[in-house]
Length: 117
Image (cartoon, rainbow, N blue to C red):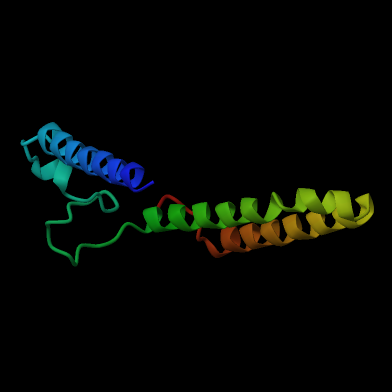
């Protein structure tokens, strides 16, 4: 039993060394400034940090988050269809969608969705 575990440790050590060697030889040595810099909202991160932030980008990100959370709340409701009655399920879905549409209409009336400024 000890020879088997010793053999497994030797094989593990050889595999780790091979992975490190392959990793060292497979890297590209050419470093590009544009590829190594992070992408931050469409502006150059190495420029002045107090440049004005795009409000449209922020709005798109918030709308994406709202709809992402909405989908993550609607998908588990399919399980409720098996548990509850069809009338209760329909009322729950209509109430949820009514709140979302009411919030969308409110944002629209406030002018938050106007793209041309």
